[in-house]
Image 1 (cartoon, rainbow, N blue to C red):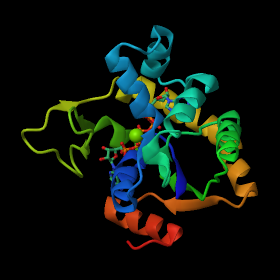
Image 2: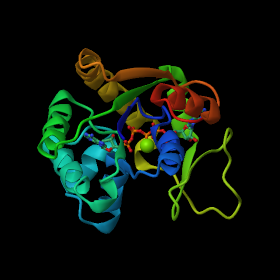
Image 3: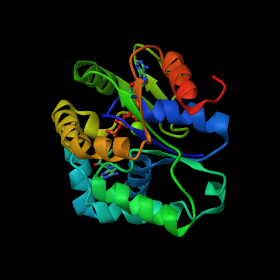
Length: 208
Ligand code: AP5
Ligand code: MG
């Protein structure tokens, strides 16, 4: 199964992908996680680090290359779940040509829908475990006492606003692109994470 998760910052893409990939036995490919890992390793261009910290989008070619390399790896043979890629029509076209070249195709694009006023609150209270990558929320899903937590640089209020604006301008074209191709399923992203997983499972016709 090849699935794309689309949704604004804080809509629960990472939270849902971790659960669903475990169930489906496919890897979770998050361009945001890959870029943060490259930043930590010191291999991400300073220009790109600055764009991410401010909450802007990287140039299409930077992320298309990352995904093109990653999906050729063995663990992607049975499928994969993309989180945060594609975000623009050129990225969607890039993905389509990578898949076509490999004789594969996209099964579904899941759009997680959450109102903007709830997103800021989710992001400000998000913490991630440094070693496991587990995502927590200080109120709804509190971390254990021994977790080593990180608060993302781009979860500061000014960067959050820019990220939400970047998403709004990006989706204007990306969602109709997938709707026209009959691939888009809209998922209500409000409710408990378990409720949202149930809605996604129904859309994918898998056991919840
Ligand atoms: P990326 O890491 O993808 O960030 P994002 O899209 O802004 O999304 P987030 O990771 O912030 O949110 P999420 O939807 O995963 O929510 P989560 O599950 O954590 O990208 C970061 C940056 O990298 C971009 O800004 C850009 O610079 C660059 N980049 C990445 N991809 C790119 C691309 N394709 N092109 C160009 N640039 C790119 O949940 C959030 C919080 O909510 C958590 O605290 C969680 O516990 C809580 N929560 C989750 N579900 C629920 C629920 N149902 N109820 C209550 N709380 C919930
Ligand atoms: Mg995420």
